[in-house]
Amino acid sequence: MADSTKYKDWYNKARADLQSANILFKYEGDCSIIAFHCQQAIEKALKSYILKHSSNLIDGHSLIYLCKEACQIMPSMKQYLKDCAFVNQFYIETRYPADIPIELSKDEARECISIAETVLNETAPQ
Image (tube, rainbow, N blue to C red; front, side):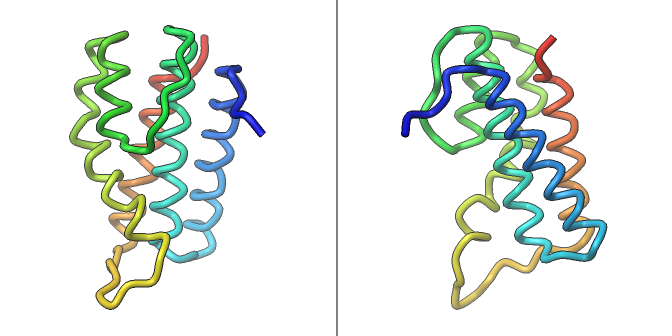
């Protein structure tokens, strides 16, 4: 199955990931899974934004790379690079068991949600 080339489909999936993160947070779910959903929400929102403005569906999962690509469309997106780097660290590390697992605090999970909400608001289809 090919990925959708409709930017609204990508944005809707981003919203669903953010909603999942918020539900998990509300019911004291695993903070690493919350962070993963936030990473996914930001990734899909950035891909949606880039797709809408360039008609190119970008491959990759790095929030830093995707944010830099979005900066080419809207230079003010540069302000989100540090936040994207913070959330980006949880993409791989939260998905698989590790001998030394990352321990995320509730505050870090809340920060991931806040960053995701900000990026989704900034990239929302008009």
